[in-house]
Image 1 (tube, rainbow, N blue to C red):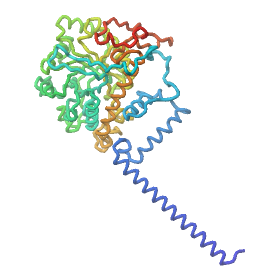
Image 2 (image 1 turned 90 degrees about the horizontal axis):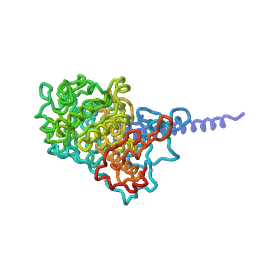
Image 3 (image 1 turned 30 degrees about the vertical axis):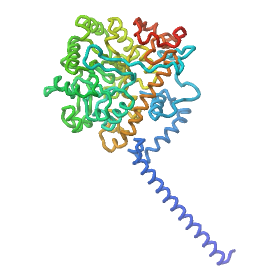
Image 4 (image 1 turned 60 degrees about the vertical axis):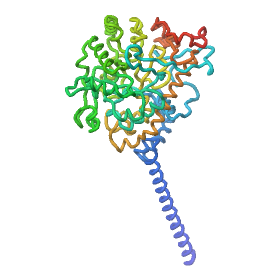
Length: 520
């Protein structure tokens, strides 16, 4: 048995070990707290990631779980292409394009290539070489029919998102990014604001059923307000919205929580009350009313005027074509924006999102073909809208006959949207669709503007890559024969067979094919 001196020594050693262990533990805890404090400071001061800026430290778990998600989906849950409304593959492409980082993938496609209505582009044996590629041709809207026609070579632009539905920093970032990329920005029905104008980008002013920003004291369309808007050189076109994809047959819905004093002043509505637009224009109840209104806006503003709609019943397209020929081409819309019925950014009843109207895959060919049938295709330009956030979707729309493509949700992803599905509330965690200043601070316009521009530029570049693979020199030279659709039997079918295109090719496209004989 050890003597008392030995026990005392052992006790002293044990006491020292405990003391040092406690000191080390305290030191590690202190170091950990300092490290967390540093991370907290870095998160709240950085401007690249809205989630980390709004939710310091906690927001970092998103990226950790996102990384783990790859493995969980691989073994337990859905694959990348099974998420809705936009799957992870679609969103990841936008995120990488917006950050201007490597957008290549490995180990083959995860896309089902034998499902009905899937799109396949037909590459030719001798694709267009880089030295033979041509810049995207400019298209002019309203030439010969208005005082100030608008020309643009940009095939991909920002669709309507109202200030109020989206935040001030989101509008500022989109406007600055549009300016940098050389694309236009649609105001949405909420009206033109100083935030749209401050960056100097091209602007399309949208006129909704409530006529926010262009109405008089009684709520009627005001020539004076139209002229005031048109006096801004940046305002290049006006778009009369008849319906939109999120809610065809219902007007805009802005929850009262988003109707701040500033939003209320711009729209001319009470603060804090739901802003619900009529489900149609009370003064436009026929095709002739529509053409009269378009002609009036064009006469007052001197700028191109068109309308936006979701196609349901299509018989009215015949009535439109007949009325234009009866009254004269000067009454025709300068453009038609065809919106898809599969939803959009706005708050909407699910019954309308899910069940009303035609998706763009059906409606765009119908509209283009009707314009061809009535020999109006050169007079009336076509803008395609709806769930097109990746290059292949935009390229498909051009093949069908669209002159331009516009996207809202694609640019929301470029701003940092994580598809939290909070757009109809005031709780968007990335600051895009909220007026909560604590959440808005996560969205720094200067940083996000660069991502907006990168996204637009990279998408248009990759549409060009698809075009060159098909053997044509630039994106606007793509035609229906370059696309095959998978039919119900899983067999590829040329789009030109399903929707025969009998339109003469515009002069500038006749010589734009690198190897016409070998192009499918």
